[in-house]
View 1 (tube, rainbow, N blue to C red):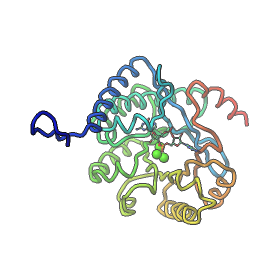
View 2: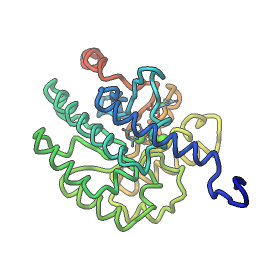
View 3: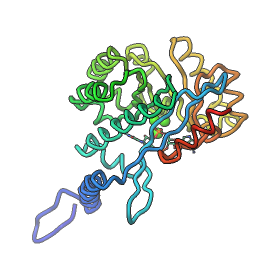
View 4: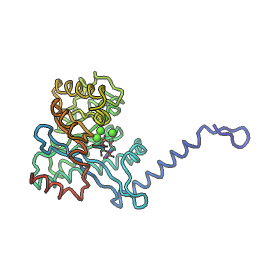
Length: 279
Ligand code: C2E
Ligand code: CA
Ligand code: CA
Ligand code: CA
């Protein structure tokens, strides 16, 4: 604590003040950025390991800041967590994903699926389910085209609420993925309780999987366990053909990573698909 003016002590530290100030400033900027359309999505393809067919995409947020350039999501989403602006921004992401799926369907990708990241704040927002239903009506789209990605942290924060929200959204057709699997602190017991469809093995295990024996064993055991539970397993961060072959041989369902494609900016999607659909 800092001494100031006589014997008074402040309970906050200067760095705390900076963080709060930074967040307040960021919130204002996000509001402006939404109005000025500085956000966009990049879509990273997910392919079936067996036949290398395009299954769908993960939607990843991008912020094109007029002065600071492209700001990666890791640099603003964690700061916005607990802010109502995260909910606002999340609504924007969801709406844009519905628009994109509509366009995909028009282009003939009839089974396409888009994965949407939800932070804890968004997932526990009491209006989430209404908002999604409203989008389904407005765009006349089935929820089967959307997968909602949650992290282990989000799920353990309030298990009973999480199960309730998931169950009601699954009833209307949404599916759920657990993102960054293996990096949280949750126990395996919740896999049994949570109505999840997909497990995404975190890229930190994939990167060194062919050099690091324990990473390799963790991945292969996870794939076997997930499959035995009747769920789908995705490997993210796949960067090499050797990783792809090893994962495919060991029964991994879906592959996402730079080896196939980096996230594709919205504006490049048309040409990406045109190329893809030819071969
Ligand atoms: P994430 O959900 O784990 O997303 C995967 C991240 O891994 C993405 O980073 C993606 O570009 C990157 N990646 C995919 N394949 C590879 C690969 O082969 N090699 C490497 N080195 N990286 C790969 P990105 O786009 O920077 O996103 C970072 C995080 O920001 C995401 O991690 C997610 O937690 C968050 N995020 C992004 N978009 C949204 C959003 O719309 N809403 C929320 N709540 N969070 C988002
Ligand atoms: Ca994700
Ligand atoms: Ca992930
Ligand atoms: Ca992550």
